[in-house]
Length: 185
Ligand code: IMP
Ligand code: MG
Image (cartoon, rainbow, N blue to C red; front, side):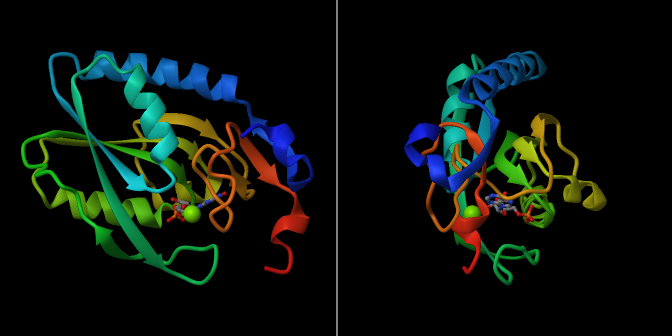
């Protein structure tokens, strides 16, 4: 889906598909250098990370496997509470493996903090984080991000996996939503 398909619902395109692609290529090159001679396990969190996982993984030359978790965080509306429940766990054992968590966005960082704590108990050889987007709030929680796509302002964004009420995940860029879409919801 192209921005012109949803013209009235978007306030502004923040990151074009070309810019996403170029940044992912840089990050993939760095990951290939950092993990030279090793095997990677990429761990994505459903559903938001689907697009970045699909594109990043195809840019990597390092041998790798993909695995997924589905989690739900209890929280009111748009803000997460940090209390997380596993809906679908990983299929693989991560003990002794080089694990790279691939995320769409870090907002408060509470979800990721929980994930890192949870995976950290399973004995991975290494555990790192790649995120396409990061909001300013996450800095307060001192989340360590090893590979970062873009720092963005504290606005609600959609596209490239990110949704509003399950819509816009298939938009091919990152955009700020027009207020009329979320006002009254
Ligand atoms: P955190 O625990 O506050 O870091 O929340 C992270 C999760 O909130 C992400 O995985 C997204 O599902 C969701 N989220 C945070 N900000 C946005 C946004 O701007 N657009 C869409 N989803 C968002
Ligand atoms: Mg969401």
